[in-house]
Length: 479
Image (cartoon, rainbow, N blue to C red; front, side, top):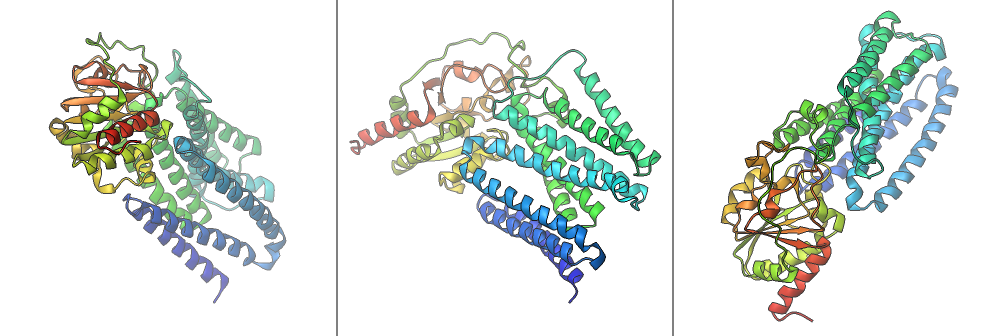
């Protein structure tokens, strides 16, 4: 059995594990095992790559053996850092880590493209047709954009960069940078035939990285879940293209699957916000709260956490709408403890998940799964929205923009037309919030001022503790 046969078989096996793992990730019940399966696929692909290095022609072995040692050292560093950071990262920082890993994937694809384009100058010639170099350049372009754009998204989510970057003529500047980048890439492919001077190749990647920064800086925080999903699609597409360049079936299949899944998720999330992807990238939504929204009537009415908990204890049906504030307070475990108390009192409790709640796709699902919340009481927006009018109580824990009725009623609001959770239709609404500030989009929330809404101010975890104590005392279980 030849080494090449083993390598090809390993790549096909890795591709199958990627696809099967991604399929299992589509359900919260099997997502954890899906990640493990895909991880085994990555291990098989890495081992096959090293087998390829040591199974090539004897004449090339000194050069490739050196590369194998460098690759092994890099792999050891990468695995060690990923293991340490993965164990250490808090759930609130998970969106930042996802953005960072997206960027690393795009950067890897860009590095492969750079290696191929610089190879003629380094090794004295490289054969390839226009298609070969065209795919290389385009994969490198979107990989570099994904790298720098994801790093900016990470910095925004981690609050290392605050606010947005907007000025008159911004779109014209971005368009000019993009045209320059495409022009350099086109020259490399069609004029230079893939044999461009190193400085031109370097200039191409610098321009692509700059465009990724310019493209992401103006995007507001409320759009970050869509942006992360978009860059995930970019990374998958770039990896698939560079897999074609290297004739690596595992990279091609994995890249195409991730790219198509990321594209579909991006479109679905944009649809959930009633906006197009281009509107997310080029509009001013999510910038700051300077838009004309009109005067909101009414006032915010505070209520003690214990009193709110007791009201829910005597309710027949309670629907919970979680948001990013739940993750910030790390209150998911206490929230579920409170839910179990309500269920023990025969209260029907359900969770309502908005598609863009949190800071990344599926953020709330991951958070609730970590606390052990059963999947059968967690519902997507379209499956539960009609039930809010039947609920005695809707409690909002750390959510803001995704429950703002202005999206339905106020045509002057920047979020008008965005589908929301219909929490305002419940008989009573409790909003758990740290203060009276606006949401991540900077838009004032009309829900807070409605007659059937009371504000429960405080850190979500401390609020849940107070509610738990109140219900336990009521049922004779207090200490």
